[in-house]
Length: 201
Image 1: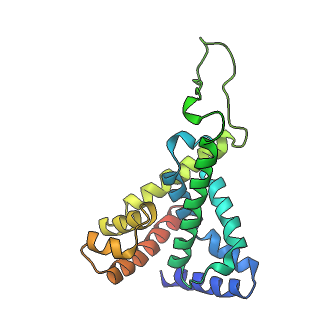
Image 2: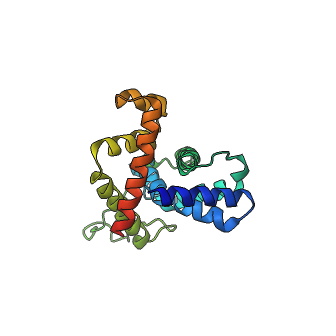
Image 3: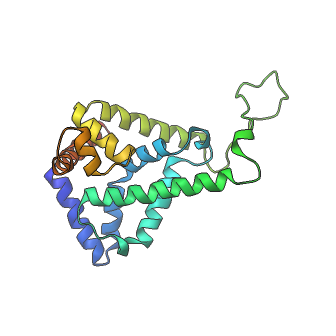
């Protein structure tokens, strides 16, 4: 547990000195968490239009560009910063797509087995292959299964922080703890999730 947090701290320190390799490692360590958040934040009817991995990739590009604006020193602070960028990217994508001339809620999804219909081939998103979508679904499902194996308090604090985006001041009372205790619980839960996830792959 301590080793992971130490590595993140070392990578962030090295990234501040201008090491792109260290920044890449620090960002990569956050990838699985961000994929889960992207899957939760993106509306179900837009999943075929933008993959979680695409949104996370854009988030990493933004983070590399704006890293000078990040003043944290820990993995938890980095994750919170990246989460905010990701949520903003999801919101921007949603706004841009829904304001296009062809509204998404007016589109007709063709059934895969449309043998009795017009005979036209199903329309597919050209930016995503079926294998990419399958990999993303498998990753999200695997991460959810890993979270389900955590103790209830660990799972709750992760959901409140990552999925709902609550502050520790809000999380504390919901868990009958102080904000500082909630922050420490979150750090332990994050380390446990990372250990469980790495042990499952």
